[in-house]
Image (cartoon, rainbow over all chains, first blue to last red; front, side):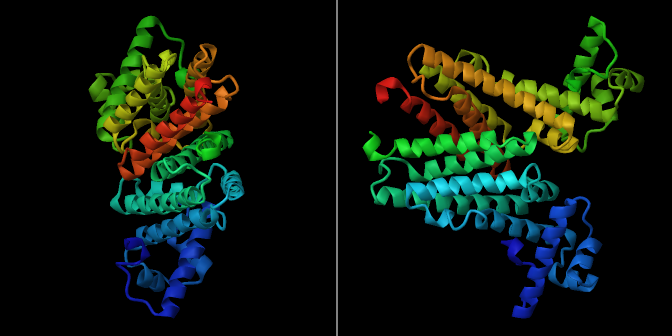
Length: 208
Length: 208
């Protein structure tokens, strides 16, 4: 992916650490100030870097830096669901994951850093689409793995389409969060998650 | 709601028709050109109106007009689901509604006029939030009515929480459409709708 630095020069470990520090600082600045109000000067001041350093690590300037920040925020979306997302092997783990997702977005409220960055970069641009597409695939893949584990241990009927159900779960979260961003209310996220999880439970062989 | 003209002067039937014509013309212009590229002059040219007419009907200028267009696009979201949305009394009606929703968003593709308008107006502004909130309430209320009809006729178990399931359905569509706008793929919308509808079917008393 271009966001992980295909267009950036090959970096030493020290260079990679500096680049990472700039991205993290920019992410904090943008979280606090909003993406449109944040200038390269704000980011330079926060990360104590020079203009030439910024352009060394991000030859494409602000847009390339914003894309790297968006990639970092996308990673965070998944990190914030750990350790639950990687451990979906029991019903209580699914419930813990559900609670962690609700808490994360409740905390975040109406301002989604990734959403704002994607809007700023242009949702329909190839770079933004590649980034969103990868996040959705990774997320769906983790949920798919969880559903398969439950099927392997006999907790969920093998006839349930694991990939389609994982896709529905990702869409449920996305829809709930989009409505949260528009209305400030968490109820749709909870309803969408719980309804889809109820379906998973209904697909338990014992419940048939 | 301010969008239906609380700040506009009281209008005669003829005035209301002219206002409506401006909103419809602006909506078409924005659908073709995109919201950021559309100027008041473009809208005046398409609707054959003068500057003073525009400001007579929309004293707040472009922003007020955009809000009226957003309100019109929100109405369309629901209109495009008719006659299915108001007739959700049988399983085949639910299936027809599901197909109509998928077809509508498949046709629309990555460019959601309402989404672009809300982004332009500022998702977090009170006017945009009021508009989105009302659309979600109306949509959810129509789905709630449909679920209640199925419960009254004994097709769905009365223990199912109709309002929460309606909320989950709205979130499923919203999530599927948001992912469609980001990736161009309709699969998540289909998976989210079908998964939630499967739950409805599983809640049929006969299936218990």
